[in-house]
View 1 (spheres, rainbow, N blue to C red):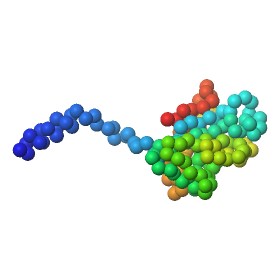
View 2: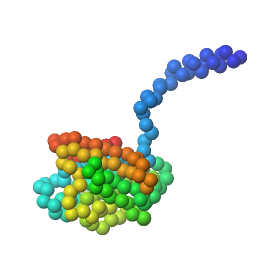
View 3: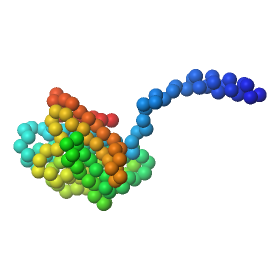
View 4: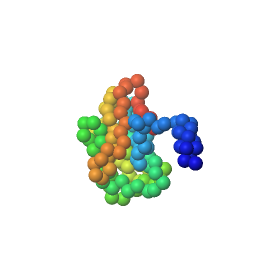
Length: 149
């Protein structure tokens, strides 16, 4: 009786596609878009600064408390999420470079200068333990943003 079970298991294994060793699980927080070159001339106006942004998404079925999490560029500019920043399951949050009134769908870094390089950079998000959760890099001057999903 044991031999047919082993043969059936072997046959089933041949039908199920193998997952590549490099395939990783989707991170709990995913960077979905980096808009690194705001529209128009870079004059450091607040409207222009807020044209630069990163959008993140909660890929889980649970609300994630982002308190202490950080968003960074490769130079080391860092935005740290405040104590009351919750991201609902499947929810998205946009982090804008300039100043404004933060809410549940958009937060403002409060900077008076640009963060994201217009030609190449890396956006990374780290949890409160500073562990890298996700990153998105770009290397282009032909477009103004990168969809990272």
